[in-house]
Length: 425
Image (tube, rainbow, N blue to C red):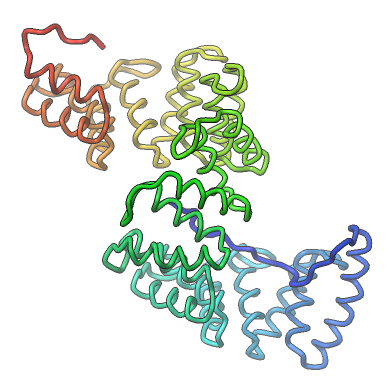
């Protein structure tokens, strides 16, 4: 399952100011800061990092990262684990200092060695993705295990993700499921979501859409945007629940309003297809554009499709290809790359270039994307940029068919029935 590299709450105040309006909260924070700074000057390191938090956020004082750094560093030098942790966050984000994963990793390591579970987990994430350190799944695993044993639910979940993905360990869906299940029982929205994904895909368990629906619903109620999105997708498709476009639309809309790029994209699909809403290409365009700009590159591909066909916009092959390229270059291999390769094959908005089309189709097929294999099959089938080779075409059509691309199955069968008229493209 895919997950955003890092999701950290950098700064927080570990107090609940129930019933306070903003003005009263700021007055309260100002009063607390006087107390925290006095405690810090008296040698209480907790007072130092708490004062640092207020300066970092501008709570009761003018926002001042330099002062935040001073207080976090003072606590860290004296061996306070949270002081080092928060100072590491400044370097991670580049707040008041030059952004440096290397410096952040050193501070997280110090905090972890002192015994802070969150720092151990964060350092594990750094090793998992190679941020400021050499990528090392084995070290990541050890740090996640350490964080998990110290009580970090996030550490447990990240450990489960290694088993789920087979990174640094033998892939083991059962171990991942056990870890996610325990985290979910402890009311971790991420644990419930990831457990739902296991049931959705039937990984190490029987596929169970109803169970997935229950888990996504629980995760959503606890604030997981991904849980909400997956819950909406079940209502959208009618898997494990009665199909309900209205519920799907409402959830996608709320997620989009909360800046979820996938929520915006999925809502755009509903407007494009007229599912639960009146078909509206202009609205779909607005939503795909929003998703694309927020980093969901399937949105870029779909926006390109609107420009290619002139749906809700003036037809513009060049703009479509620019969007396909953006999607393709950012990992949207199945649709973005396939559509870009088609443009080079057909000469739509670009100079016709069979070799470029072949290169892109082959790139996506090598990554086991069925659409790319189908495109590669057509090139060999029709002798475009390569010598016509029916045997090679069969191989790629079959791979596309095995990968779930229906046109690959159709063309594969037709190559064994040469007397039947080929479907034109």
